[in-house]
Length: 141
Image (cartoon, helix red, strand yellow):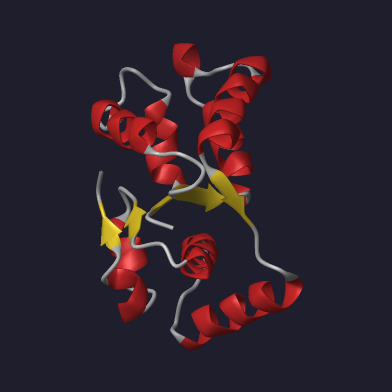
């Protein structure tokens, strides 16, 4: 797989007034299911984030479901089996990853599973600290 998309890139893809919208959308539009993927868990993260935005920016569940369908049409969804999931958490704990950073570690493991050449994220530092194999693949769109 060529590209793996972090949730931090997927969210601005669908928010026209987001500072990273243009770059994120451009990368997303270059992607297809043969060359690109994201973690299946990212669907839940996108949904949770977009339906809890403050004030007028908040989107309805129905609106977000349309965006999720766009993601499913364009990207291969990647999951970890129970053994991979457990191993990823154990590796993260051994590397000193704590708190919510575990979610980035799980997404990174999905990227490794696909042998993604590039991990697109706006949270570069979060991914770089996971391990050197991940750090060398991380880029912003």
